[in-house]
Image (cartoon, rainbow, N blue to C red; front, side, top):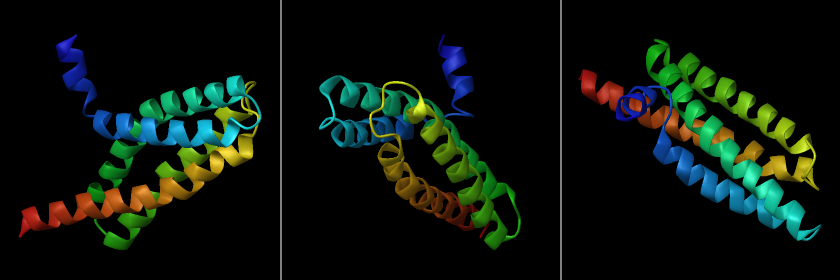
Length: 134
């Protein structure tokens, strides 16, 4: 099991997944709680699990694009557009499934956080790479 976990860290950022899952799950639960307690808890749980799994993978995708594309402006564009676009689309898809009272409103936090988070992460990783190369 330990070997699997170590190998999976190449594709998933577990720390960011846990942090993102807790924050986004709570926000989405609060958005949907006024409709019904069950709907709010269902929506929040879906968002937390989704953000943990997909968010931890898109964080790594963002990181790889930021450091592997040579041209800096293109690296930032791809490192934000691809992971953020994927996560926003998938988040909306998850919330349109039965159980989320407000699917569009539940996706808005992802629409805001994903591009900002990806840009922050891309800049952080790209700057660390550039400092290492100096």
